[in-house]
Image 1: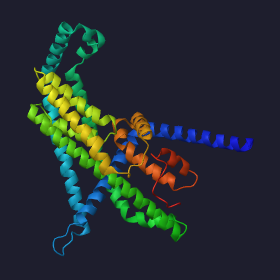
Image 2: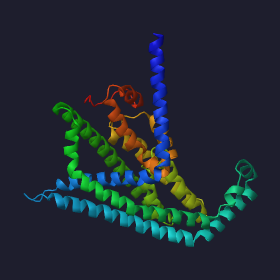
Image 3: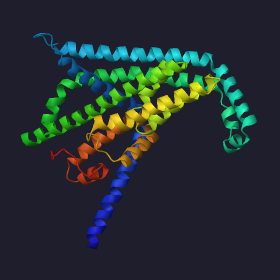
Image 4: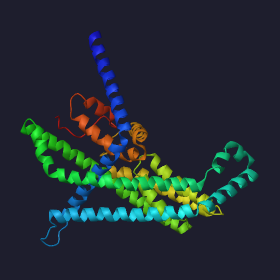
Length: 354
């Protein structure tokens, strides 16, 4: 019994060492790995859109395979160009108006100090007043420029992924020892594909719905750069739990330094906040169902861990990566217990047993 306990302790210690080394390698290699993972994500998205275009029927005519990929690639490029246009235009305007917003913020802080002494004592306002909006905006522009530059590397990765795509099926069949194992592997990949598509589809729909309704509220309130804040809401909603909170705070802070009266500020903050709450806590769980069977604690830990290793990109990718890892671990006897611990209710629906 003592020898068995020592063996289990050794296995647990070994797993901790493996996790630590893996995390360290992922952290130091982030400049190489993040563009590769994003390229893989966009490659998967193009394939997913191509399948959707393949379901189009005009009489007896069905779009051929090359046209499906052409349409999906064109749609993706169109969306990226639209995003770049909104972001570059809004950031340029923000940089130009940074001094005005700085002045409005200083005026707001001085009013708080004069009228609400207790508030000024409870919240340190000096660090807030020392924020240089112009420098902050320029640093955002620099970060955005580096992201655009990395698109070239992402495009190169995507090109080679599409070149490799035609051989993937044959390679998967070659690494399987038997036909039975090949079928099990194929079933696992289909399960992963189904769950990832469900997550991305539902998340995209609810994020888009939240962004459109929020844009309407901000536009009616007269908030500047409403389209940019709506785009930010759409993007940040892909970050679990904290993304929706941050997405509410940004336009709320903008309203605070833009408007002289409290009414439009409250409209923006409470309007966007109510939309986030209704969609995120009622509509999204109903649409997602049990397909995202991951423990909430694991979601938070995954978010923090991937965010610490890869920054904002890691936060976006944390849930798809965790979902795939759980599905893979469940299908191996030695790691199934880990997958069950990471699940919400200790039940997973795949039974491929590789």
